[in-house]
Image (cartoon, rainbow over all chains, first blue to last red; front, side, top):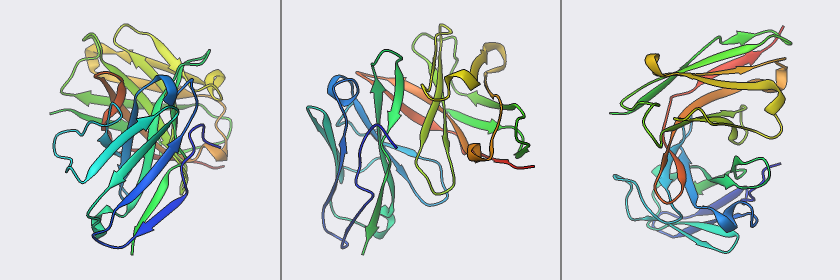
Length: 111
Length: 121
């Protein structure tokens, strides 16, 4: 069971918008920056968003991130079939034994 | 160009110790602010963070696996090594190493391709 809670799956039609939530606590999301990762089938994860809402070079602005309190959200607009993947949120957890935590992952289906 | 590549045995027996090596290029783990993490992913399941080592040899471990893990670095070889003791079939997974960069916060900006490890007798 993951420390960060994500919906197991989301779906939307091509061209539409989808959001993926990531819920945590004050020891992780509440006091640290969130990053998001895209994992296409059979490949290694890839950084999508860092520092809550920044995109690395090469990531299109269709992908966006936000954070409020102990929750974060990934938004994807103009959905493409190539966006079908698993998406994970992650952040540092500053509890007594500091460690990194991931969400359980969300499977995006583009119908 | 930053790259990381994992290597190690594809098959280990239960109770054995697993040793994985992450060989990287394009950065130095002796540079202030550099960090490398290990992450694993059982087939069909979510990512699970295992351990992190910093440029100053600071180390952090998964709370649930702390007693079984040891992370170390060889700066001269640009390698990070992870050992996991007392392997069990539930440890069957793809193991990744990733560079951890920092801006305001920390994040894994470059990942290796992963190496699949099966635990079976």
